[in-house]
Amino acid sequence: MAPLTHFDAQGHAHMVDVSDKPATDRIATARGHVRMTPETLEIVMQGTAKKGDVLGVARLAGIMGAKKTAELIPLCHPLPITKVKLDLTPDPGLPGVRVEATVKTTGQTGVEMEALTAVSTACLTIYDMLKAVERTMEIGGIAVTLKDGGKSGRFETA
Image (cartoon, rainbow, N blue to C red; front, side, top):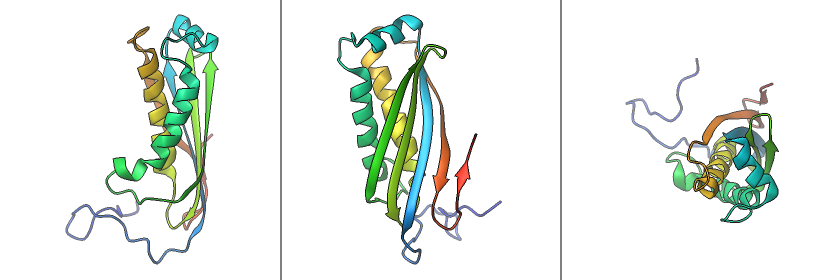
């Protein structure tokens, strides 16, 4: 197992110095979901939630979350994000909404945390917009599914 880079020789947390790393194209994709009753999902699909367009607002929240990652996660570097794409897909088989975020940059460190933050923020927004209808919704399955670029190369899950 590789050593943890966010700790110095004394075991203190620190921000990793990436100044000697070359800037390369980076991409990361993460996914997650919000499980809900079929009745709540129907409200999402019909666009009749009292707070408005659940998927549209959640998409914007995910984009904003990706852009604010360095402010939320203490040791993340602020990055010049070049693209954030969120796909929010109603899934009656879940039942609920599947969320996938892809984030791109050209920089000295990856965007996995930005993709995870985008998914998390979108899922939390879906919950917030629908909690008056259903408080038992469940957020889950949040994971990185793709990371590419940089020294460690490509990582992809099934």
